Length: 357
Image 1 (cartoon, rainbow, N blue to C red):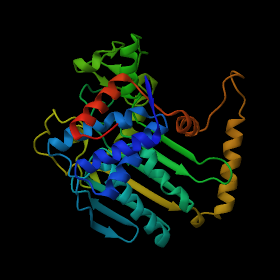
Image 2 (cartoon, rainbow, N blue to C red; image 1 turned 30 degrees about the vertical axis):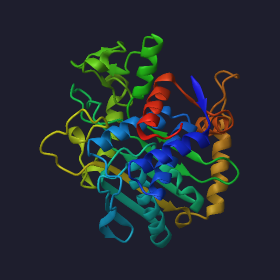
Image 3 (tube, rainbow, N blue to C red; image 1 turned 90 degrees about the horizontal axis):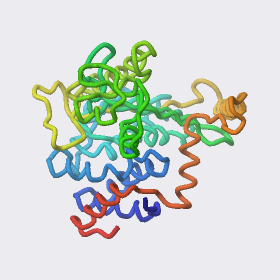
């Protein structure tokens, strides 16, 4: 395990995106989105993904100089074609438009087609916070989760994020995948030789499995709720909601046709849409109640939950997003931890593009 400062990683990733052909502004935006994941402790969506972006770019599946454009709109709503650009760039641009629409119409809603992986959903939702707005972002993803009672992967981890402004407390940020567990946790258990809990994954026949290598043998993650008897239909429904808003509504691909993040897997034939899809939104608070009243009530809400009676006095009750804010504060001081495999990948990219790490 090695620690690298935020500024070092930011500089490296910004230069790398530039070397791939992105403009100065786009390189900075993409780097900001990427490093925000590492800072918040969501390491599976941070610089560990850089080598994957490079692979997709080399395969011709990512356009580093996209002409992002609105192809349909009606007052508060719009659809964007991302021109196969980095989702790390396309989604923030769409969120900026949603915020401007919200300033005029009270809310702004954007569906995005023809994009790619957009990093952590929370980054995009939080862009609304400086404007005292509620932000929302979601995306469909590589199919890795079957519907309840199925053994075919039809949905991705399909994350959802909402961000709420506050007065004195830190913003409340909800950001979660609609799968029972992140794939990265399976990998950590495999490396540490640990057994995983029942309900995290199923084998290729649809049976529950605790084998950490199951995913390499055709196994799949389960929807949020894990098994049917524990409520997997609810996670299935949430994942479907994300897929419909991000894919069907935008004109992007959806279901089993969502493009894989890895370059070595081919796209399925007869694609129903264009690229990956996202959905973003921003809402002005003062259309519902005064901003000050809402933010004051949010502080009360947060404190009441943090002070809820504990099961164990040594284990605090957290509100959504609190752990990530704590992690960010720590990592800005101590640096961002990178495991040996990620560091090895970054050094490969450093040599490949002649960029100092």
